[in-house]
Image 1 (cartoon, helix red, strand yellow):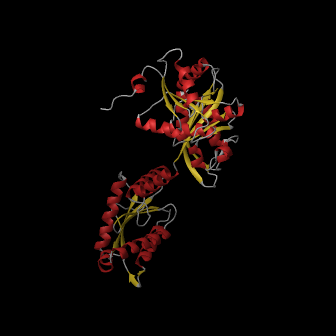
Image 2: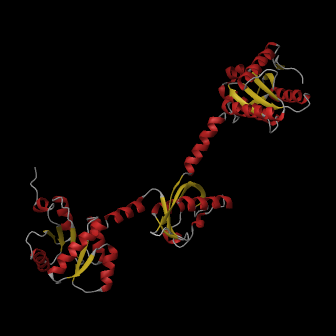
Image 3: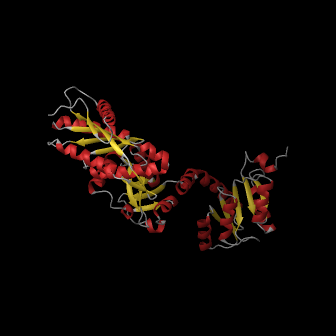
Length: 438
């Protein structure tokens, strides 16, 4: 096992100072000043350049508590030295040592990430005090640095506004999602992103909830800088002062455009037949139930039909399933054109279809509609230059009836009537025995 270094043995008791100074005389002076009051006040590790400091960090697993940094080194000069040191030793306070009392240089060093700035040759007490203050400030600001790190690296877009909704700050994800840079967004209002999708009532309700509850959560359609409209899931919260007055608003949002598109596609697949794009059994059952409820309220009538193609199996057997699929698609389009907006046509699977037809006061309108359907189906469909011909057998029942029936019973009755049409010779329709003229 590797023996612990001096600093590793002492680091739990005293601060470890990494002194990066290329002048041996200055380095010796700093060393003496740090330890002049107490020999074990600090553990001091010296390096003459950033490269040597890097080597010590790697070879000795060095983890300093503070860095004393000369700005002018053999491998770096000026404020760039501070930036390189911050990258080399992140999250460690840096106190800069320089031979010049230059305010601009001091300001630039602080902006580059230094905690403090001392002139070489200052009294030892000032040097020791600067180190301890740097350590205390660094510890005190840990939460703030962590919050800043989270702010900058969060996957959510973050926007902070003042009480008048003027943008004060945004993070990198805001720019990634919206396309607006920080410079373009700060000073603007969130309406910069408005897509025009929401009406005044939406925003009135939004402001009311935010004022009453202190936060709002929901989905908003906004517009990127490119002009593309996108959907975001947003949470916005009020930040209040000690007196309860609103000081700021903090808004977090994620782009859910792709998820919404996938959700819409899944919902469509759950309710529509993938081949013909007609409603499937699930959606048909819902619409039938709705139509039955409407008929009860308004004393109107429905016809429920079950349709099965005659001669469809030979099409698949002789021409292949691709031909059969094409035939089903073409016939679905033809049947849809025969129907009215208030009617529903669904594919139940294979070559079976179901219909809900809103009946007009004159019954012959149903007969005409069924005849149109059969004529549209019987017209051949051309597949690779060859005609594909089928007909249809249709069974029909009605609602309401003298006895109480539910949706499934209606479908069963229509199915029974369809088989009666098949037995009677196909290519025709039959009415269920429960039918009685009104």
